Image 1: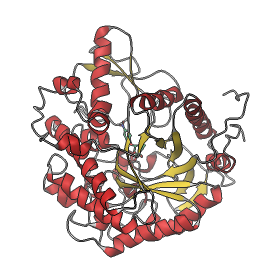
Image 2: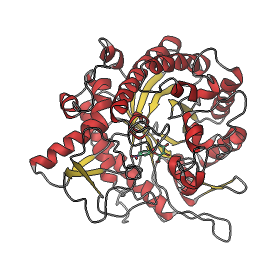
Image 3: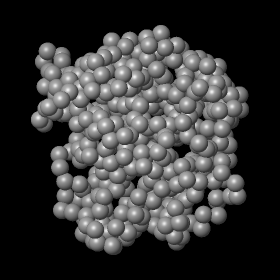
Image 4: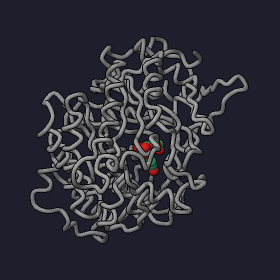
Amino acid sequence: MSEPATPVTFPPAFLWGAATSAYQIEGAVREDGRTPSVWDTFSHTPGRTADGDTGDIAVDHYHRYREDVALMAELGLTAYRFSVSWSRVQPTGRGPAVQRGLDFYRRLVDELLAHGIKPAITLYHWDLPQELEDAGGWPERDVAFRFAEYARIVGEALGDRVEQWITLNEPWCSAFLGYGSGVHAPGRTDAAASLRAAHHLNLAHGLGASALRSVMPSRNTVAVSLNSSVVRTVSQDPADLAAGRKIDDLANGVFHGPMLHGAYPETLLAATSSVSDWSHVLDGDLAVINQPLDALGLNYYTPTLVSAAGEASPSGPRPDGHGASPYSPWPGADDVTFHRTPGERTEMGWTIDPSGLYELIMRYTREAPRLPLYVTENGAAYDDKPDPDGRVHDPERIAYLHAHLSAVRRALADGADVRGYYLWSLMDNFEWAYGYGKRFGAVYVDYATLARIPKSSAHWYGRAARTGTLPPVDA
Ligand code: PNW
């Protein structure tokens, strides 16, 4: 990769963060009153995760959070996005809060603040309390109201010290990988249920945002993190463009339609009419969902390339967790073919394409002109290993980060209001159905000893955070 002629410099207030989620790092799944979430059940079901990996211990962050915060501070990070485990706070998904559960997050937040690191809380990163799933899960409307109660409890407990709040992480994955293709917990494969789940996640976002605002100081911000897809088509042929539109509706419009514009796209309702009559959308729901947001979180990894039905490209479809199931996570889109985008790939098989991040930011800059944006996840998995000297060199990840942060900088220059970037992930962790085999961390974790070793990318990123300027890729 060639060096830019001028240094890539960011505004002084730009947040340099890293992100994680509760089930992927905490472990301690039976401590302090926590009960199973759908991910405990799913990971303990034979055949669901690679090598039968579970989050039972994960990287033991529950016991090592002080060390982890110290490491972030040492590297120079200024922000940290983590999620709260609903099952620690309300083990059955309802009723009074468990103080010991909340206390863990209070200690974590205080530790972050003491080190000058700005916390951002994600309330829901996929770990639904199992009891709520047993009562029907996200396809049932009641779960949205339970979520609002939970949001209120956490907002009351931590709203005085945490300013940045995110209701849901990637509701697309919860709805369509959880209830459609079944590659994520709870592993159900029911297209109609996945559309109901998507609506109830939207409703949960709206109700949860109101609940947070009713108990928190007004300076706090409420956002949502979407894995908005950058959908491209193999040609400008009308049939291919229609396929692109369909996937864009199912990936993006299904969430940002109601959240940002107060309606589901007509084209989405039409495209899914054979699967659902959408009678689960009740009067008044869209007004609840269409809350003014304080910010929007964008999670970006790779673009999606589609065409009208036909042969997939010779290299096959994107092997990103969609392909691992005979059931599609795209209801009503059996006539769409997915292709691999050309180019270099990460360990996940995801094509590296920083222009997609630029496009995504510019799209929301146009669609929601006054909404501050954050990149709440971006990163890459590589097959990292310590050298004989114990150091971990990951030049590929440095190149990835440099390219994507440069895309963010380009969007800033073109008028986008991006306030921060959270690298996925702070440290290697439980990569869902892929288990521990895929390493996304800037910090390496030796799973035998749970020792943390900052990779060269962590040092590189820390330098960027401390100076506000991207170091050269060979630094
Ligand atoms: C996101 N897909 O997951 C999540 O927010 C993280 O928890 C996760 O570790 C990270 O990205 C890396 O995978 C995704 O199939 C999982 O399109 C699957 C998809 C997208 C995002």
